[in-house]
Image 1 (cartoon, rainbow, N blue to C red):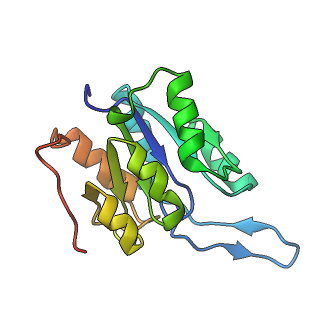
Image 2 (cartoon, rainbow, N blue to C red; image 1 turned 135 degrees about the vertical axis):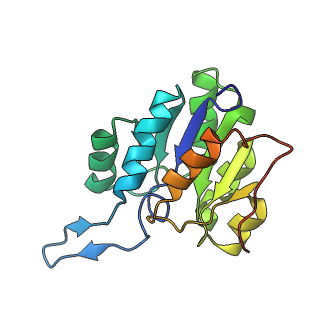
Image 3 (tube, rainbow, N blue to C red; image 1 turned 120 degrees about the horizontal axis):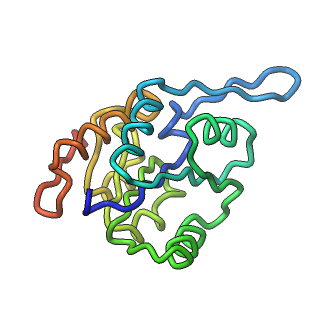
Length: 165
C-alpha cells in the first residue's frame, strides 16, 4: 500500500484490553487477541512495517513482539521524541505512518504522524486527535479491524471513517 509505510502500536490498551493480571510473586500477564496476531501477519504480507512503542518496561511487551516477529521500543518516556528519531533515522515520512493509540500519553506522537488512529475505548482527547476511530476496543480485534480497513483501500485523506464518539 503506497499511502502507509509503517504502523506503530501502543501496547497496553491497543494490543491488550488495558488490564493486567498481577500475581502474588509480582509477575504480570495480559490478554491479547489472536485475530490481531493474524492481522499483523497479513499486514506484513502487504509490505507494511510494524512496531510496538510502549512506555512500559515489561517482558510481556517483548514476548508479544517476538511472537509477532515485529520490533519494539519499550521504556519509552517520550513517545513523540522516540518515534521522531526512529523515523528520521530510517528515512520514513511521518505522513505515511499510522499510530494506533488509546490514552493521553499517546497524544503527542499521534500529532506527529499522518494517520493517528484510536481504538473505540480510547480517551476522549485521543479520539479528538484521531483521523480514524475504530469500532473495536483495544485487545478485542482492533488491529484486525485496522487490517480490514487498510485492505479495503479506503485509507486515504479524503475517506476517513469515524467510530461512535
